[in-house]
Image (tube, rainbow, N blue to C red; front, side, top):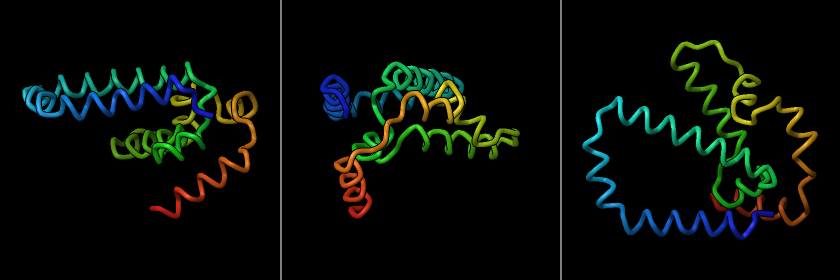
Length: 128
């Protein structure tokens, strides 16, 4: 299950973004495309590092809470690679996102989903 620290962090980010959105929007518009690309890339790397540091946060919990997970990132990574004409398959993308093969991840870090997790996931899917 998601830890209190992780949940508090998401709430804090959401609250901070709401308070600072006008200022952030203004400053954001002054970035060059190159600055924006570098910033976006570094934030993505930090997000992957954060997920890697929090392997106890399960994909199903991310899906329940936020509607995306590490698998989603892998699919988006592969899709963007295709858009850019790069030869990466889903296994390549998963290894980038998970920091290991998907089979290694499942074996070492993905317990079977609980009945409660599955029920919450199903409820979230119905709400879409």
